[in-house]
Image (cartoon, rainbow, N blue to C red; front, side, top):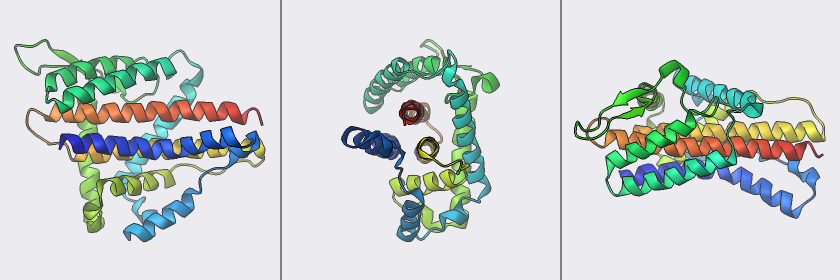
Length: 279
């Protein structure tokens, strides 16, 4: 189970990186005007529909999917508005988060759940310095968590984590009621389907022209990336145990992968926007 959660997080991040890597390659090998070339998501979604037999255009209309899409959209706007504030995501903070994620993975694989949560507490402390990031601490705050009476207590966003975990369970149950075949898909394919559904619920379009096309393409890639982060978190949380001593560490591990994915998406979006301004 532990290895599966980590694999799912890697899959979610890989979905995010695929577009960014292609853009980096175009930037290196072609002229700057080709930055505006973007992935044809609509064709990809049609292929996914044929592959899974699930009508993703219909799938996206489910209430729970719309709710998750709204969260993803809200984070997009929040992180974009924070781009000029002192609380923005920076590469220095991303490096710190990645180092903590690596340490968390090692502790998680070793079965040291308390160490996972200690490191996660440090991870959350960095998240709190980033406007609009993965935890809405202004609304939910941090709670004191006692893992073991003989060990120091921790300050974690337990209320938020519990709500998101419950939402993930309800979403998957809701999806399976309408699409029983969803549960038979490989976990990575479930992430792809949910990513596509969330993406289709985000605003698209805009002005035309080299710069505008580039910026619109960057926005669509950003929407896809954050959709992948939310989809990966949902699937990962759904396979965490709902009771037992390991549930906290499992959820924490899923959230750290989600946080890294969101951070990379935000930084990647800003990088592409800078290139768009040079067109």
